[in-house]
Image (tube, rainbow, N blue to C red; front, top):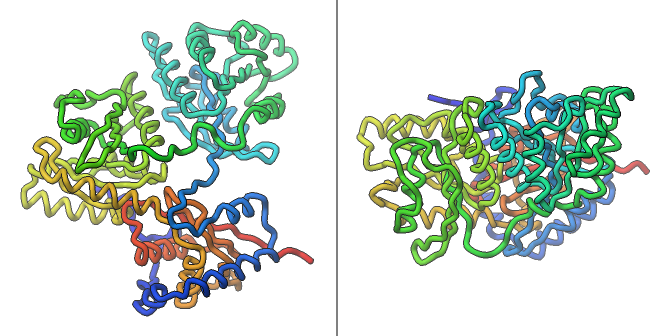
Length: 512
């Protein structure tokens, strides 16, 4: 068994010992005087004036709404994608920009095996960097691979930073990417990398031939020229991402995820009532996500069937690797993910990794246990144990037991999707949320740490989709205490099928 996650376990190894919310607390919260709790919340909000709040704090407080039907999102950070052929120094440049060594750097081409996001800041501006790479450097297919990688990065970015080894000059592979970059409407910057001193600067001039404008001489290794490059990028990078913002309205969008050959295409075909996608016993038949509008139980849904995510990304060749990247792209455009699990096989590390991918994306989640018709009593007993141990961290996700091939229990999928999306959309009024926090902290105050006891000054739901709560506190809350708050939120408001984020902002009292 995988046993990767242990529910409610602290990062320091201690288990949470907070009991469930008492029935008296639940009763008091259900009988709240709306006007009274609103006035109390307003008083707590006013009290924040005594604390040092930044512009982003004020933006969160202003964006909070008590309208239960209001759909709000935290502003999407602008996205800068870094593309280029293997071994030109993309990851080294990422490390230089984010100011810490996170991206793997080696002299071996193709070390970066996945599309990785990092949060970065420059001149007071926050943005997301997408470090790309991951193609297999095989002589036959590298041009197509690099272009496919760049294409995905561009689709999901507001601006593109194209990194070239200035000492080598433009190669055929670079030209391949350039042809595609010229067609895009995104701003493109050329980083002439490995210009470590003044003597090498003339090498950057050869990159004018790429036709992408001024090449910026930089040294990712020494940091030379990186500040000037970032200054120029900030001039065109929007305050809020134009591509990462959510679509609102239209049919709800469902991504079907799962490891290869788990039955994703069969599920889509069954839902659509026709052979919309090729189904083959050979794993990996599906390469690209396929959008399909289908009607189930009188409702229209937009389904995206995606290629299976393989266990070891670094072992993937060519099309398989790019299929997994496109799966990530499909998930980013979806609202709810159906993760299919083959019950005839043990729950694997792959299954857990795919579920974690959904959690990281903040999408609603439904678990579909497929091939239920193949289950015997002995396998059923093992399966329940596997679910209890390996999927405990998503015990809140609706489960449906189906057979995509025969259509068994397919009608249960729609109520599960609706429940997950309803939770994902849920908004708790600020007054009620602060009353909830007051009850919780009265019953079980935060432990004293280092002679100090952190207090929660005020809380608000900063956004829905997924429900994201922000707590303004006087000190750092233990991870276990934050999980305690999250579990109590679920006990009272359900949130079945939706991740729940509880963030905190530690603020000090303003000095008079």
